[in-house]
Image (cartoon, rainbow, N blue to C red; front, side):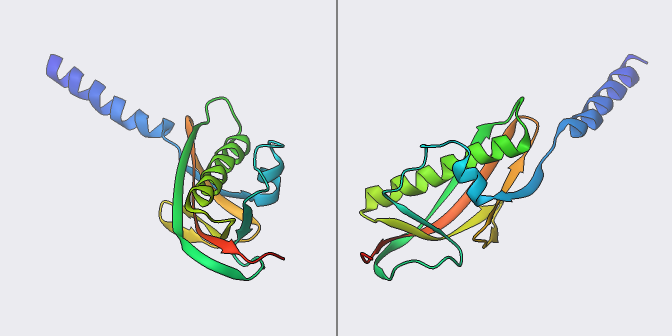
Length: 145
């Protein structure tokens, strides 16, 4: 009887753990996210999302990816996703600086390897505790305007 009780308790624990696991995948506006924390993203490295026009490319350095996570506990999905999006963008800008580029072009969402190209939206996965954004973009040197 004791073994049956323990087996029942174990099954109940596994069944209820799925209730708390959440991974809501949504899209959010790029412009709103870039403005959500003023002064955080610098303008020394240009950012051009998929499909946006930009000056001619002088030198292509390479494609680079980010995969950032942030604490989402107690935050709305939108607030957590905007914050982690900024972290991903900052990582792309830092990579461009390190590689000698002056822009990141063709930036796309790549959440869970689902590549989505949009000039206006990014994809974010948010759970009860963690939110994540993955981006990929081409680090380049653009010709001066």
